[in-house]
Amino acid sequence: MGDVAQVRPEGRIYNAATFSSALIALMITVGDTLHDIGDINSLFTLIPTAIFASLYVIGRLRGVSITLVLAFSLIGILSMVYDWTFFYGLRGTSLFIAFTITVVVPTISKGVLKAVIMTILFTCITILFILEYCDLVPLGKYQSANDHISDLYMTSVFLMIGLLILISYIVQNYNEQKVRADRLNLELETSNKHLQQSLNAKNEFFSIISHDLRGPVGALNGLGRLLSQQDDLDEDEREMIIDSIQVSSKQALGLLDNLLYWARVETGQMKPKIETVNLEKLTRSNVELLSPNITAKELRVQTEGLVETMALFDKEMMALIIRNLLSNAIKFTPSKGIISITSEKVGGY
Image 1: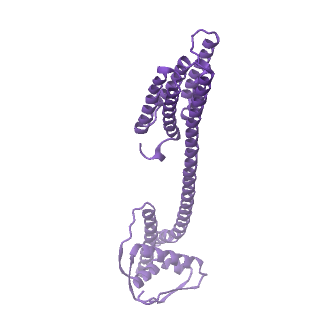
Image 2: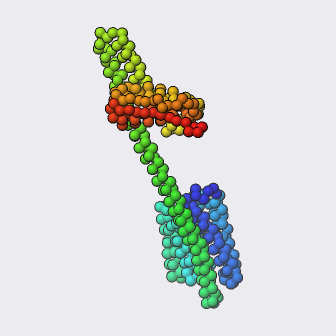
Image 3: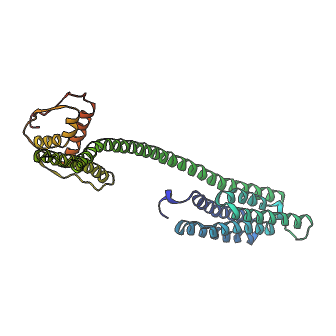
């Protein structure tokens, strides 16, 4: 049976249709018996009652299949033929049954199956009309006009009750599906917004990393070219260039670490590792890492306001935050400007 939301609308309507058909057949049997219409033939209506009930149970337990839909439709058509044969032809209630099948079948079938079932139904109705019009089959007659009216009234009322149950279920199913669809659309819209925000953040992050990488990578390229082309460098100059290469390579490595870290966070592979770290030393090390960019713009970084303190945080996350803040400060501070980094203790924090 499972969750109702997991059952297709056609399957849910099929279950309602088989239940309603079983109920209608049972009520018709009881009504005909009480009014002494049809004699022993009325009791045979219990057969389609049992079949419809069985189809309902199978549909609930095993799910609705094409075979069950076809079986339901054929049993309905056979019930119409049975009613026409034993209950006074087209003067009886067979047309009511045909109308009911015409209403129900399109809601539980589609495509070729629906075309086949409706073709069989209209073919049967046409044949019954011809047989009765040409008087080729002897049909019974109501014992009185009151019996005729009673039979038509009871059957029409029972069919209307069954159709009312079915239509109410279809409307309820439609409303439930609409509410579910609206909720899913809202969730999808929210997910799209989050996705767009994530994409925007990713694009901005890559833009920043790409821009920042140009500095150290360009410096490495220039210093390497200088080493290879200048043969008359003295030891101090050579040592200065090597130190600069180390600083630039360390800076590029830090930026690549940022990129790797972001990728791990986005894929859910990164979990915070909380530990006690010296915040002042971590800040100064990141200032040193970005020193080539600072030197290039002739900036001055003041760190005198930093408080020597130990704090609990994820070292890599905090380093990334500090580098990003410092990179922005370097980017937006005018040449020969001052960047001030300070911290203070507030209470126990």
